Image (cartoon, rainbow, N blue to C red; front, side, top):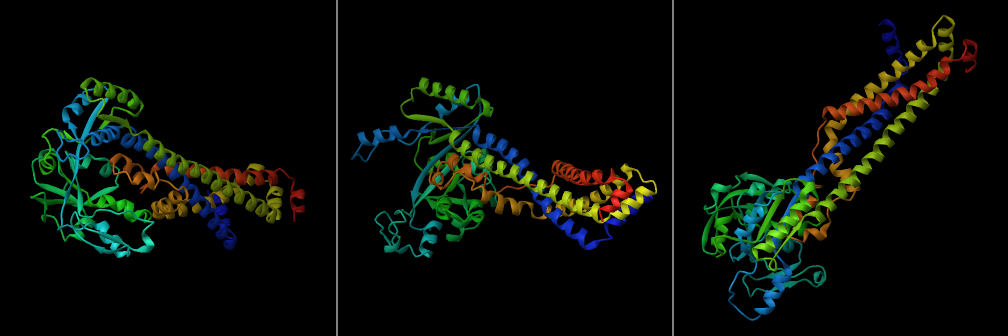
Length: 474
């Protein structure tokens, strides 16, 4: 024990050199620990993406059907059917399929209001893109000359209604793209209540709080909750596109049917969850067969979320690849630093080593001395690295690693209001991780390996020389 204490004291004999070595190793170990965290987190995010995106099937009216429908009814003001909706019975039949676990049923529509203000409209007016704005269906939007090529004319007096049975279960809230910050979700038992959940931007623009009310098609609807679009504050690029969803008014599904004058069993979208990612294609084929048997094969189309899932996983795999390169680079650099430092150290202490060998120190005793000194330095560097990374981990991952990887599904997908489409890049929006025992264990093992390998080579080579040969190194 006394010899170990003496060896550790030797570490602090040359404070300047060893502090510099500890500092450099701390940086290497911090990067290595960060890369281990990213790698572990990437694997967990892939599994999460499988559950939230990879297992989803979306049922809706096909574009081909709508094109044909409006072509045949061109000029008509009254329709014999609601072209965008379908019967809930079809969703029920699909839900009975073997590989389908659950379904989230949705009703979407719009209403017009001259009393409500769109947050997107306010944003673009602040940027000077609109010099004039008139409310109502005959309103006119005047676009500045410099912006005519950059923006599309939009109707800001029309607001979207999204009716769902359980708001907390929809993908936007599941993936964290939208986060409830005030009030409560509504659930199954709220289906007949005249309540809604709106965005904080929408609430601010219209001076709304929990308990306030808005008028939708003549019905008074009370604000039950307020959500925040988390992706807006995490990445400013594409802000206008992301804000397109901030006008959404989420309402219990039965209430939304009443507000939109739809049938009691009407749906516009149904999102099904397969029992596993591996069974998605089987579930898709079963659902297609069920649709054909129900007689809605020409009107409805069901598709898996494969494209969005693959895009998201591809982005995560990019991050995972970067983490592996960074991991080997960080600990490789640490190995080279320890190796070169120990070569310099053993040569600089040649007389001490020769004296120790002359008085009977064994080769293993010489090696042990340098290993303990090196382990002490590496342990201190590792502990400091773990503390610093635990404080900066999430910031570095979200503001360095993910941006370097250029992750996300791209802005093109953001134009699609479909909840599944827009949820894909949200998985990459904000990674939260912590220093769990696996990260600490892997980082410790890697650091010890770097230390032992970098120290053993020069220590073994010097210990094998005779005392007279060792002293010649001076």
